[in-house]
Length: 456
Image (spheres, rainbow, N blue to C red):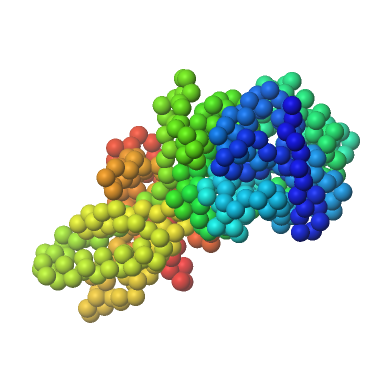
């Protein structure tokens, strides 16, 4: 039996269909895409089993966006604003004062926008197989070619989209979902929805997400890529990234048990039951951007200036770095004698901190008789998933950040390519400094220098 349909009315007067399952702590789930009816997937046995498992011991709420499924079809637009309004209407009509929000695939950016606008209502945020940028979710060349034939053959266009979501081996499932969607979605709305998805970008909102966040991503998914998930987790303060096996964008396809178990554990409604055969690598990790500072020629300075004067420079270094950490959300992990190791929840915060450090050092001026400044700092950054233990961080991500710092000269900020990609679109300027093979590593790493001087 299908769930009973209820309706909510948006502020602009559109009727939005939603349904509930189970009872308990509420979990509101977005559609997978603005043009895919939620009950369409309910009619698939695998999907129904997935939603029923999620609804055990909790209240599950799902809905159809405007123009889709049982919601009102006569609409003039779909946009970030209207799709957030759909979510708002359902949450209000269902009487949800506080709830967990689960956004996946191309609708997750609208969940992010809602969470930022209503921080007091969202207890936890789950983001599955998605990116802050809608354009990351598709092979844009294939999408464009399919779009060229859409007017003549909307079924072929939709098959391309659904195959990308469910995998190319899921022939019968794809055809069933395509048939259901064509019955419940006007081709005009389908075009409108895809345009909205591709144009959506909520990157600038990520740093404002206040709710504890879990980013789930399947390792072999091509669109969006694992790098997009890493960037998403890195830019949301304190977010955890959990990498699962598989390549299907839909949560009920492939290892659905692993998805449900991860969500159960994160929400804390009941203990996680590890599915049989689940790989041991499914441990929740947090993406950190690691920053190392080091004073230039500290040993030589001590011999030249004496212990007391050299210690004054160390204190100046510590004050500058700690002030910058405080200003940009960094956490000091440890003092390394001649430098400091710190961790950041976002790459942009770490880069802003590094720039502030170098500008503060430069503001101290040159040394006596026009010589080079006594205090010079070199900085290295890398991002990854280090192991946390007893207030310290360990692992490859940390080791590489240390090696990158060692490559930097006085006044330089060097970063790995992953940091540069995480900070894409954040107005930082990078210069390619080529590759080097870090000590203890087998493969070469490409380095980029951050241009921080006002006249650079």
